[in-house]
Length: 282
Length: 267
Image 1 (cartoon, each protein chain N blue to C red):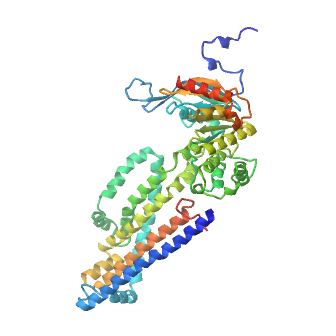
Image 2: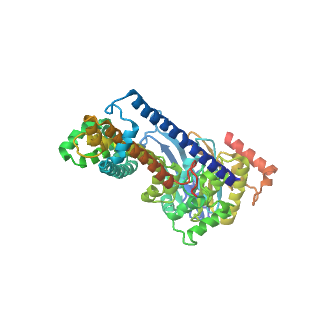
């Protein structure tokens, strides 16, 4: 009944320690990232440090699909690496499930997918998927069988013994995606995973990813500079602006699920894409 | 479709293999033939240029040849092994420690800049006339290509795979053996091929200076005694070893480095 005191705290939504939202999974509080220059707060030096991200607040719920959309240099890849604890913020804090991101990384909660497949050329498709299982424990299933099942799930069972150079770009990216799923991590971090693919393959992989997400309900943080892709995939589109990287606006995508290719031609979809584009260009 | 292309490629490969061996053999035969004839017709003295038939006879009848060859091989192989172990270990240290990289690299360059011949007398003073100083010379002369190539190879590992390994909290050891070292293999073998021929240079030059055995000793003594046929035998042997080493490393590389484009994916 009494007005919650947290709502009265100025314009800073995540400022309150969110006990009310235990489900909030990934959380960035006032995160800034400055590259180069030995830190020490000397931001005034001409041509010195580069501010990749400035005061970013973001909360991603468990099982949510969030797209980070923005032009080159807006710090969206940096943001992804901060969440994965591959780099450490100059200011602010990144928490996952209430604990520091480092803890989540040590607990193998992140599956990382890059723009390029980044497979090991001397390993077959199966052995590439097997790589994380040589590091992470996965007791649910014998590793070989797990890898075969995963390859099967993306239609690559026949190619298990093929080397990367014998696979097409789309096939390699599929291998890279199931490699990131091998130990069944709850969070998938994807850095422009489809941007190097042709349109048809890209559309196919987007639908595959949506099917996977519907099936397994993973939390997905998806970096892209493709507006339609962000709208098609995500629950929310985080629109970012460059120099320094900031969150411009967060657009909820109120399109129904499951989303199918036909939806791309609907007025609602196109209106949403336009809105995102306008937000981006503003 | 792919299978057809593969067989076709194989067949083409075989065709080019035989056409690759044919021409050099013809040329060799032509050169040896005209050499033989020229020596006979122009009446060139044996000490100046022995005919190939004479060199061949020498090669077959010289019973000390295998002794000298085995000494040189032993020196080259031992020095190479020492250098490979230390070189790869140092390269591993260099990619893991910026301090080591900055601290050690200038001296690796210095070690390469000093003409090896200038060090030989010093090593002889310290270690005598046995095979030890020769092994050390070989190790020193082969160290540079092995260290630099291995370092470059270890650094060639795909940074995104390194990030992936970090994102799953893989240990440094695991990353080294599963990602960095395999990435470096083609570079390591490139270094080995260079080091292989250098190891012969090192052993022979070492034997020039104070030695009573080895192919280098054979070269020096036969030259001073104007036994040119013997000199040719030694040179022939060294060439044969050099080529064999190169082929050995190429074969080894093919066997170890799998799945790379340009290589057939095994049987």
